[in-house]
Image: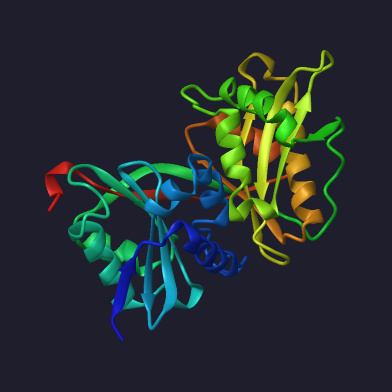
Length: 290
């Protein structure tokens, strides 16, 4: 049967999240995680639905795409469909010819072994900047981070958002967006955590996302207040996130960060995550646009 592209309604996002959860297997390449959708949900359910694409055959979702901004499509595939040629060529055709991405310079994030990477490369797509994958197995206990960890709820949302804004230049985090995110389907398997300094100021924050027992968990985002770096807060909050995921039954914790961000890579490694590999997005130059 033919592969069909669709876009879910806000009420249909639960089916998309459940499909993504089933695909988070440690034996397959790291790809779009339900936590990525959960983090995007800070913009609201309607906007999240508008940014989501699915590719199905006979009613079964085989691939999911999230438009993370105007020019980036992040993809995930059912493990058995990673090398499905009909699916890969249909996704490639839709990306280029059906308005999934605009004309001009755009990027696609896809798992390393997915056939879509070969198909887009054949069509003239090049490689983008490298991203480093880091992972920690959660089969063994994670050491205590050595600081008090606070579980963030609605009452702390405004303070958490302010700490995140102080961690990333250009962040637009607000308490309203925190509440929208927390109302999303994926947040049922998430933990939002924070560390305070000796004065009680929130100085490091993280959200970790479980995909279910025995499946891969995700860190997204993690930030340390720019005025409080160099004191081990990033290591501590990352370890706390890993401990939370282990309590939720996750098999491992993963995170991608730009390889150029050597400070973030070092922080994750200090928290016990191992540097596994690098991945590059596929990029279409404006000159090769359809």
